[in-house]
Amino acid sequence: MLIWENIKLALAGILGNKMRSVLTMLGIIIGIGSVIAIMTVSTSMTTSITSTFANMGANNITVGVKKQSEKQETRRNGMRFGFSNRQKSLDEKDRISDEMIDRLKQTFPSQIDTVALSESVGNGTVTSNGNSASVTVTGINKGYYEANDVTLLAGRYLTDEDVDGEKAVIMVSDRFIDTVFGSEISDEEVLEKKILLGIDKLYYSFYIVGVYEYVEDATSFSSDSDEEVQTTAYIPITTGKEKLHSDSGYQQITVVTTEAVTDVTAFASQIENYMNNRFYSNNEDYQITSRTMSTLTESMSESIGTISIAIAFIAGISLLVGGIGVMNIMLVSITERTREIGTRKALGAKNSSIRLQFIIEAMLLCLIGGVLGILVGFGLGAIAASVMGYTASAPAVAIIGSVAFSMIIGVFFGFYPANKAACMDPIEALRYE
Image (cartoon, rainbow, N blue to C red; front, side, top):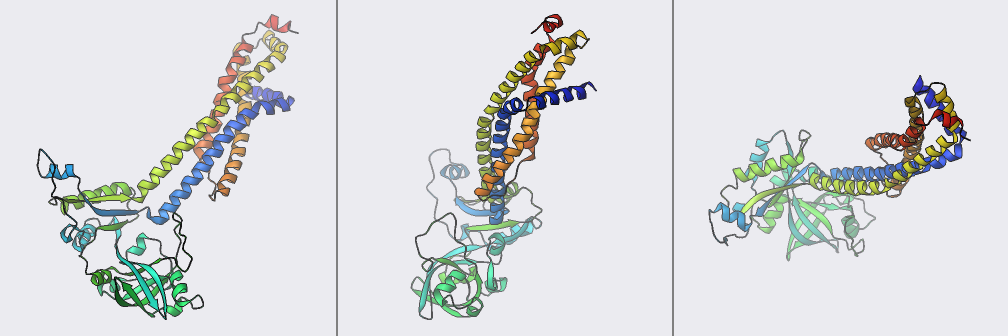
C-alpha cells in the first residue's frame, strides 16, 4: 500500500505542474526517442538486406578451384628452403569433374538440394530476320535456376534432357526479343524460332525454348540504350563446351543446400575439407575453396549494427542531460515541499518512506518520458525507414531496454534529492518559509 500511495502522490505532483513536468521529461523523450529511431532504421535496413541476400541465394555455397599459395605448396612438397615455381595453369585434371560432383551429392544427400553449373561461353551476336543483338552466352544446367532468380515469362527452362543431349536450344530475355523481333511480337510467338548465334566468327543455329524477364543490375550503371543493352542467353552447358571444344569439368560450382542445413558457413567448410581430402590431397598446385552469401550478409549486418550502436550511444548522451534535468527539478520540488516533508516526519514517517516517495516520483517522470520517447522514436524511425524504402521494424530488446534504462535513470538521478529530503531535520523543515 505504501508504494501505491507514493505512486498516487507522485502522479498528483506531476499533474499539478504539467508544464514543468513536460519540460523535465523532454531530455528523456529526446534521448530515448533518438535511440529507438536509430535502432528502428538499423533493424529495418538489416532485415531488408538479409531478405534481399536470401533471395539472391543465402543458402548457396560457391565451391571453386584456386591456386595454392607458394607457402602452401612449399609446405606440401616438404621443402624447407626457398619457394617452388612448379605451379601451372589450370588443366582438365585440376577441374571439378562430374564424378566429383556425384560423389559430393552422395556423401551429403540430406544437405545438398542440387548443384548449379554455369560456364561462360563468350560474347556473341544473334541474327534473325535481318536484325541482330549482342548477347553474353552462358552454359548452364537445370540446377542453375535453383541457385539464381530467373523469372520465366514464356516457354520453359532448360532441362536435364537438353544438357544430356547437348541440344541446340537457347533461353533469351524479353529485352532481347524486343530488340531482335520487335515489341509488337509476343514472347510466346518467338518460341521454337530459329536464330543464328555467332561466336568467334563461327555461327551456330539455336531454337528458342524459353523467354525470361530481364532485370537490370542495380549495382552497375550502363550508358547504353535499351536496344544496346547486352543481355545473357542461356544454353545447355554441355552444348557450350562442345561448341568451344573446352575441357571437361568445372572451375566453379554452386551448391544449393536444403532446409536441413542451419549453418551454411559451417557446411561450406565441411564441403571444402571433404573435397580437398578426397580429391585434391595429391594436387600440388590447386585446392578447393568455398564462400557463402551468408558470410557477406553477416558482415554487412554487423557493420550496420556497429555503426548504429555507435550513433545510438552518442544520441544516448542526451539521456545524461535528461537525468540531470530530473535531478534539478526534484531538488526544486523538495525545496517547495519542505514543510510537507517536515510535517510527515513529525507525524512519524521514516526516512526510508520519505526517500522512497521521491525516488518513485523521479522514476515515474522518467518512465512516462521513456514511453513517450519510444512512441516518438518509433514514429520517426518508421518515417525514415519508409522514405528509404524499408519496412519499419523496431527491435523488442531496444524497447524493453529503453524502458528499463529510463527507470534506472530515475533511480540514479532521483536518489540524491530523495536522500536529501529523507535526511531533513523535521524541526528545521517545519520552520522553513
